[in-house]
Length: 187
Image (cartoon, rainbow, N blue to C red; front, side, top):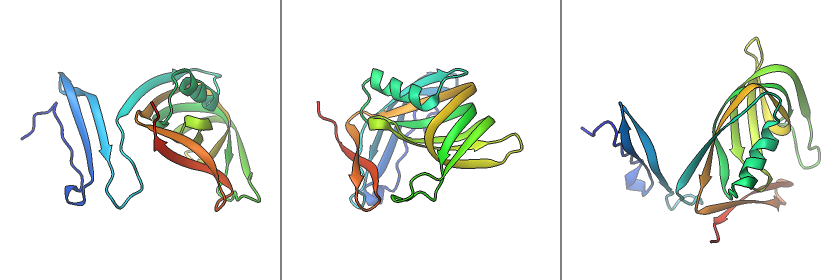
């Protein structure tokens, strides 16, 4: 049996894919994560990298996208993404799924208090975020974040960075949008 504060996880070793989580120190029954290494198998176009984590809390009245992009720029993060976010907003502007290159903005503008059910996406090179927000009756809406996502009480955000990669956006003629391009980080 593995000891509680040292955890190794191997996923589909026979397919040459692995994800290793190594926790270092023990504090009570919990450990601290010191290293996360992800490696992709030959059948994907993915690349592996070490992972750094940052935690921030945004307060009432702060616009989430603006503050997250400022954090990324201040800390010179080149391959940043959202690991987790909980909190609430008082407004948001989302682009819904009907968007195409010709008709980009079927927009839903939300006013009033909503819980952040999910916030996911990349933050480097201008970012690309999607959110799911729940109203006071539990109804959920979601879409591409266009902005105006203003904190009501708090937004507790954990940001990850693939320290050996760079995220950029380039126009993809197939979609008509600037899409993610992943490359090795230049030192």
